[in-house]
Image 1 (cartoon, rainbow, N blue to C red):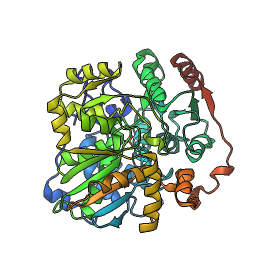
Image 2: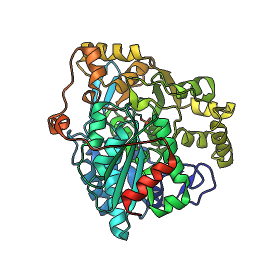
Image 3: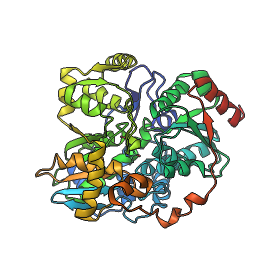
Image 4: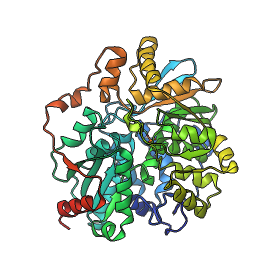
Length: 461
Ligand SMILES: *Cc1c(COP(=O)(O)O)cnc(C)c1O
């Protein structure tokens, strides 16, 4: 199994190399050269298995010989042992033919834990074999950073730096990043938006001298290993509703397009998925692109679902790569045009995307009203991101069962939930002391040179 770049100019890599590399050296993202197929019989055989066993069977073909079968099984077991629910990703019913996939039972209460806990185990195991030390730098709109810090804190061969937009993450998110006491954890509050943080991160990766000097590794959702880990719960949930004998659809609250792209991969592997519905908040570049064909940035509007406050949706490049017939040069050109504001998707590519993806957007008022209504109708308390998903899904219900992804626990966004329901959702007991722990954070400018200097100094390079 080899991985190739969406811009066609970087060397093909193994799974282990792609995981350690993150962003390709031509600026592109790694994708599998060919997507492994699962037969109907193989999918049917997943019924009744544990989440971990399904994870093993779905991901094994992608790993190549980076790990042995037994190693990989052991790492999966460790990754999910800290989850607060025996099913890992339980499915609950909201109404006729509408189901909610609860992805918030991990250690930091958001779906990012599914990928980050696994990538933490995989990277540690890979580094233990070579004795190398790496520097992880991540940009976050809140949940990636807390999940990464939780997964990498205290690991001996890793320093982890997380850039988050100052003042634009929830207090629970911030505290999850700033309270771990381990010396290898560095929480950095940048003066700017998430897009600024992500842009500086990409700058660091594109500075090859710096990148090689500190052995930079990325854990943002551009990292293929993260996408892969998220493919698993599309299988586990679809199978529990009767796949492969029954087709299902998914609605996914979307920001960077990582989570929903994992659903696309599940579909490519043979899972019978009818529609993949992109649900956006008022930052609706993806909805505009899929409905009107124009992918154009127009500034980030802070919302009550901050983990989706994104204008440049990095993983969309992977979907475009397939929609443009895997033409790396065409993708490189589109990404050049994006630097000056945006591009038009070709008619052929748009048609290909629309065969699979639908989309919708949800306003701030609709998000709050959905939290209120769902609590009244079902007793389920949604976080604002999950509410965006549910609202958009409701416009796409039909004969095919719809599974909406609940991406975070309501207690991670208590202000919005309290506004909608009058009740402040409680943190699970295992993190009830979060507000008593002391914080450690560095305020940093939106400036590449200053950031590089800080990383060099803290890592002793
Ligand atoms: C990251 C995140 C999203 C968006 O996921 P993408 O993979 O970036 O599309 C949605 N909801 C929550 C709670 C998140 O943390």
